[in-house]
Length: 188
Image 1 (cartoon, rainbow, N blue to C red):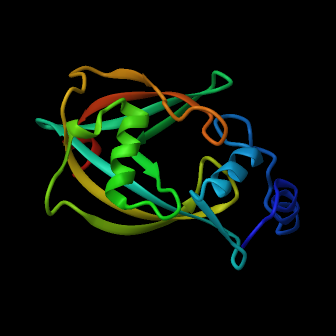
Image 2: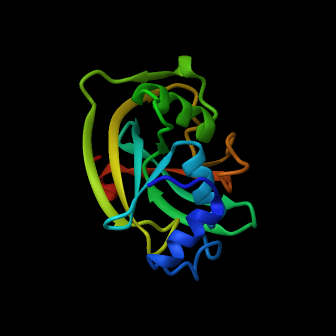
Image 3: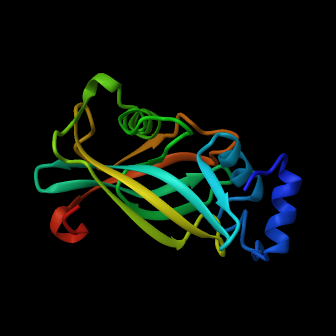
């Protein structure tokens, strides 16, 4: 679906209907944030059935027998949103997957492109349909492009990192990263 402005998006969400009562609270994003994702080409909306569609990259970073996990995010209003996921980034319209990997690692971890080595043969793609914690009540289909990468210069202990993309469309101020044993997280 195409929307010319945020008012048209809001009217469509209301008409579908999508219950937006929880949006903008308790770690959920707002209609304004969804509009920014659409404007940036990070999200498309499908009408029938109502669904948010997102292309994203997921990066598996190992340190010995541990894997890097985003444990939490601090949002603009000071709320902490629990995550428990691998580093991931929404792709922008027309963006190549490897470019998105490098951009995501730079924005969320402060890693320079030259410090990232994408491991050959690690690429896999899969889909996941679920209710997004960002927009409760709006089903989201994720097309996930997964890579393993070697990343130089990351701290050996758990750490917070400011989000370089913080601002309109991205209310995440900073990310909390932890090294979890592969045996606890699973085998990504």
